[in-house]
Image (cartoon, rainbow, N blue to C red; front, side):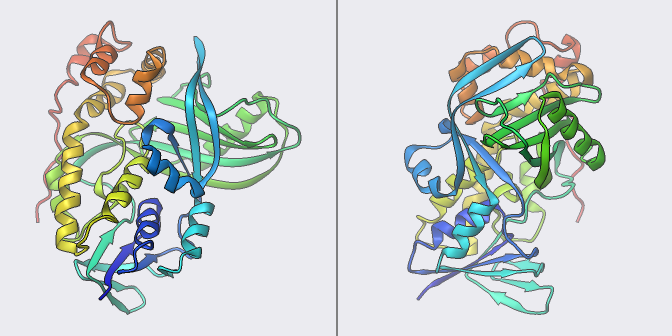
Amino acid sequence: MKQRVLLVGGGLANGLIALRLAERKDVECTLVEREERIGGEHVWSFHDSDLDAAQLEWIGPLIERSWPTHGVRFPRFCRTLSGGYHAVTSDRLRQRVAQSDGIRIRSGVAARSLEPHGVALEDGTRIEADAVLDGRGAVPASPELRIAAQKFVGQWLELDSPHDLAGPLLMDATVGQPDGYRFVYTLPFSPTLVHVEDTLYDADAMIDLPAMRESIQRYAGEQGWSVRRVVREERGVLPIVLGGDIEAFWASGPAGVPRSGMRAALFHPTTGYSLPDAVRLADELARRDTLGSEDLHAWIRARSIDKWKRDRFYRLLNRMLFEAALPGRRHLVLQRFYRLPEPLIQRFYAGRSTVADRFRVLVGRPPVPVRRALSCLVDSRRPTPRVS
């Protein structure tokens, strides 16, 4: 008898879970997405060192483009870093899910309510399952977590003539820094097609769309690029976690319903990158014999809480960036970080910083006021617990 798994939310995390479960003959998988298409308009990037060889192999068909190096630019220096960098696109994710015979898609309908063994949809229908996974993205304005924002607007620009980018620029912080830490992120997909993303680390999650679009066009002009057309656009807000109560976070929401991806707080607290955690979750979930909601809820909850404890160092750095550094000088924190040894930077992105790495990041005179930095050592401003 097949185990029925219902994935609510058609983003990266649930898309990867669906693809892995579709490889099993004993699982019936349904993906529910409120929009007409799963995946949205997104680019998800990751480093070689974020995944092991087997994980890199199975996610390979989703990769739109890979590069052997990537770079950063700051007012005082530029640097090229070795190590592969890869971009997965929502187009590739959609294609692979649509081509899979083992995945049923219900798009264009939102879930009204979730229970461990069933979902009521807005069109009045109900779907029963052995397991329901909630993967509808980050919990909006979660009172259990203290969160700042990495907000972005990205455009795929088709150029009249070739650009001169040798590879991705993860951060170009030579742009103005008027209201926080701002940088431009670029991915060259072809000689005349480049993804340009205006990114701002800010306490406010509101996106000023006209201003960020203007920033992209101004940046393109400063590079000497003549833009023929904007092929597509994406926008979003990634959570940057400062602190909170992870157990209270899991106590909120639909009782007993397992979660995935951002909804499960499975992402890098500082970069907001979620693909490595999503790959690992999908990989390990698909190998489990029992796929009931009770078992999955306990397992994913424990996984999320364990990650939260291991990520304490990254939340400290986030507090130093947002609460100790003055807004116009936040770029100096990252400028200092990118002068450190390359293996340390790779382990940082992979969320595997060693004790020695942490000491190296924190030692010396920080580019923030010392008294303000010391005040960030302990997460003393916990969110107010939700009252039921």
